[in-house]
Image (cartoon, rainbow, N blue to C red; front, side, top):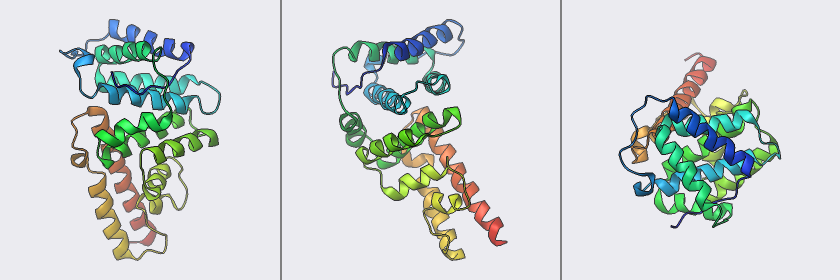
Length: 232
């Protein structure tokens, strides 16, 4: 079927699938009219789940907050029925194939624009930060995934800064040094606003659009923070 998947422990997968069923039974959301297998973006969603699993397992501790984050993400963005189908298909496929991070990322590299891959990176940071802290082992794993996704270091540091707040975070988000002139700050803001604008995704996927909107807001906040700092 062309899916590139990564093995998840049974307990971890059971939590996901059980949650899908529980929330599906009590859901009033409109469900998708077509089966998940007919969805051309299905393998991307499966690989997104697999990449999330590698981050969750990176520190050797499977934390409930991180599991819940992923489960809520799939339900809220794809609906209970499609989310249930995603996990069901994942369960079937991991028994057949085991691939590495490079293979998981290759589907995104081959099928999606750079802006979409930035959304994937943002989501993975969200997974790691679900318990309020991104462990070094999780950061290392996300960095490894970013390289496989072809993410530039400046973009990686920009998204990382959205989760690691310090005095330089606003500048890192805009991908400029703290010595940048006021004009350079303004130019960087315009460039980043275009870069993270939801329209750049070339996708109607609600999860990706939501991620782009969140980063777009972070760019605006960073720019406003620098303006306030400089009294502009």
